[in-house]
Length: 352
Image 1 (cartoon, rainbow, N blue to C red):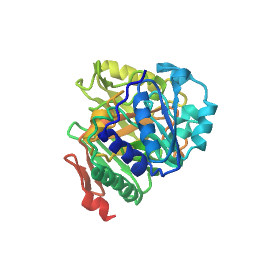
Image 2: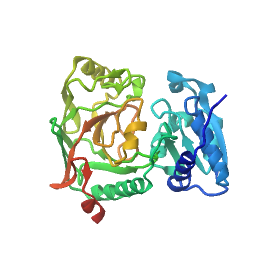
Image 3: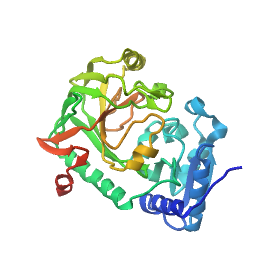
Image 4: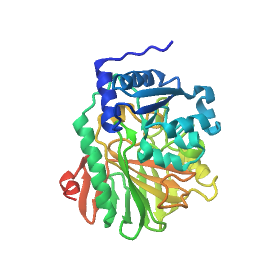
């Protein structure tokens, strides 16, 4: 038996997700992918989609394996066919445990879904009945994301610092393969992902936040921050880059050992600066209800990913890719401040 409520607040939130963010219309066919942890939310969304005149179906993937077995399940041909045939698909299962790439048997589909192509969305549905959705704020920072990506694509020297000691630069005119507005992790998250060219990111990152559940060891992060195991009270993890490669690192012994094991266990080694992620959301709901599995991608952070991307300009996420969060950055472009004191300089960003 699945208990599900369907309050006015949930209906309002469902409408915003399905009709505003995903831009679904009456008659559209929708796929909601869930497991037992998020089945109740999938049922609520499907109920409301039906009320909107849409045709929903729920696919519960628990039958294919729970926990770590999600990473070992074969490509699901029937699910792939359903997603490809649908007008829009929503993945409610935790994105650190599975993704569209695993369903399709093609890791490129991970990026396709994060960028909103083919109307595939990662839906962070935790606590949907409790959300206080500020629709105007969400639409504003989504527009900010688009404009900031265009501004950064125009080039300039990106300089990021923090009070804890982060200090790195990247030449966005000569040293970038691509940049993307990441807006398909809904409803609260958005970022601009910058993919630096090999050799162009220099400086130090002082990781005072959490690290992502790295792809090869999703079960446990290098620098964890989740209920029952929080290590961000420890001294920061310091990683120095020279010409886009990890040159040195130091910090808590246990985190250094995890970092070394992860970086050097893949071929090629995961020692490249693979991404600069500028988080553009300002939503408190993102921090309360999203990313609960590892505590990363918070609204007041920037992250740099280490990995082994050899296809820059084509994809964001290589076989190995791990984001490292830094809190309260100062972000400048050619000396002009884009972000400081937890506020974006929207006057500058929207001018472009």
